[in-house]
Image (cartoon, rainbow, N blue to C red; front, side, top):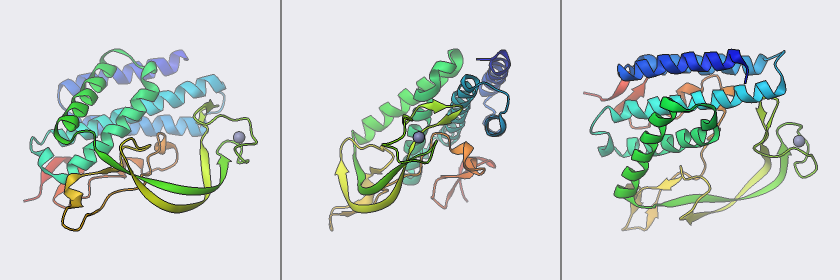
Amino acid sequence: MSEKLLTRLNDFASQWIKDLEKDDLQKLLGDTENFVDDLAQQLSSGTGNSPEERNYQYVGSVFIRGLYDYIQICMVLQDSNWYRNADLLDYVWRKYWDCKTRFDFSQNIAGGDFSDHLSSLLTKLASFYQAHFGNGMYLSPDLLIRRLECSICAQDFRACGHISGRLYNGIMCRTLARGIELKRASILEHPEDPRCRIWPWNYDPNTGKFKGTMLTMFQIDDFLFNKAWAKMGQPAHAGYRVSAAGPATPDA
Ligand SMILES: [Zn+2]
């Protein structure tokens, strides 16, 4: 990793830890959003950097994006009654997986205090949900996919040499499903996307019917594709706000 990128990440880290100690989540949220945007812009325009350097930059950006998830979770947890709200329980569960996915992918790049804060919160949340809701059941779609396209070269994925999940010049290769048809939904104990959890309050034992999410739009690097990434996926409950305006507060 270049000295310059390393210095920037370290500077950001030390300031971040200071603000966290002051419990200034509002400032942290804004600073983290700006830093992610800054790194994303560099990645998009990043001329002159070597492919290896761009890959490091990508991983660093994903890590900082995971810190943003972390702060969003902390803001909800500031309200000691958060777990009484069904939408917030679902929201924190999804954020937990967003944060965990980004952290698992990128934690090798940042150690020390950063990692300690994140792993400690993630472990606490995992125990909380396990203790209160067990392993859970999940919705999973059975899809008919007519064609898999490579995100790097746009060719048929079976024919090109790119490998899904690998970084190429600061871009992650992924398979893009084309011509999707939903065949049916399954209920699984071990789903591909644990964000699609069926909660007890979404199940009506009288009718045997339930509602749930079948697909989420999670993208580890959403900040590269959506300028409004920071505004997406806020909790739906009308009585609660978790926004840049402040921590979760019940409306009077
Ligand atoms: Zn390809």
